[in-house]
Image (cartoon, one colour):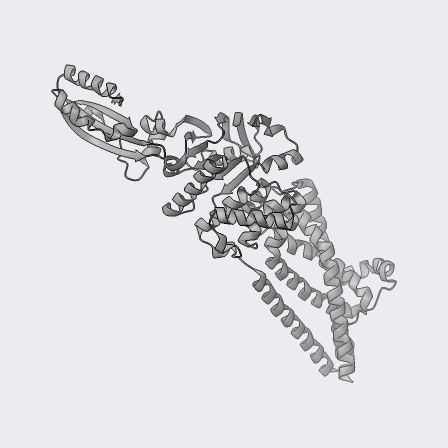
Length: 214
Length: 334
């Protein structure tokens, strides 16, 4: 009976985390790029816009996840037709992780030296060319590390989502482990979460290192 | 031809303003290797960046072949920049791209076909002698090799002008020489005008045709390199020449400490090889005491400087000086 509960929960977690990783990157990456290029001394300097965007991102990051999940219920309803359940949880997960991704991307993209950007400008590169042909490839190893961090964060969030009816390992641990006092199920769930985190970290480090030519 | 007209650059930050470049006007001829030398903080880096508007001049105009660069819109500026290559002190290569990809980058911006890019990159790799490093990453190269890649990348689009921002400052003397040789070859064979800023007199001596000396945001002296070595006008120029290895400090000679007349001779080219001093001693009734001397090998000619103490009657000394002048030697009485 353990297997029948654990395996689907594990798959649910992987499903939630991977889909929300993709969406949070789709939302967060452009924001990170905007933060970098519009900052003072950036290639598309817009200090006022930069301050407003930074402020919004900070506000979103300050909202505790458990509250954010409830705030976005209407959006979940609109997008997936439900407010609880595994698929519905992807909405708050993506929204919660997007500002985090934006800051992580900002940090990574900023690692490209001013000199390299300057030399690209001296060759007559446009802003999109600098973003996609210079900033992105130059900071790719660091971006991979950032995505690793995001995935691990999302695993944590997804476990929390279990508390309000999202599926996955977190839900299993809370529902059976905590409420029904099935300690073995709770331990197995937690162990699997730890394994998942360790595995992703290991893989992320490996990829980041292997693509870094610095 | 590059013409700078009344260029000024002022930086404003919260604490006040800094005038990095003050009202500089300058003409650089086509096919020339023009040096701008100055100590750090003199404003030379700001000045060279104004030429391709990596720094926007606060005031003034810059003409390149008659086109006012300062009036161009963003799009026109980008295409103008493709005619102005630039190399940097720290090379600024793309660390995640191979040597090949680095050189291909400006060609990709031009949207050339893969085949065209391949032909051009291979040509350039051959030109800078790095064919075997094609697939290496910058981190696997020496400083000199990195700068060669940067040079190849800078000239990939056949620019008319190459700017060098301390292009040899991070290199050892031997590598510096080989990069300077490469730059000279580029000027000679591709007829590219080169503007280089440096704080090393060795670089100026080795390669430049003309040089501007910058101090506190202004040009204090501008001269051909020959004339600069022959008779530098400013103390800044003198101290740069004295900074050269093997050059004897000339300034320390104070005529008050000698009873005879102190003269400084400078001679050019073939004259540097003639036994002029021994002729003076034989022909005139004076004694000669050599205080200091040096010969500088410029890329175009040799320049010798000699500081002498002449002891004897005023009449004989004046005759000797006249003789020297007739021998085409520049004489300065100190």
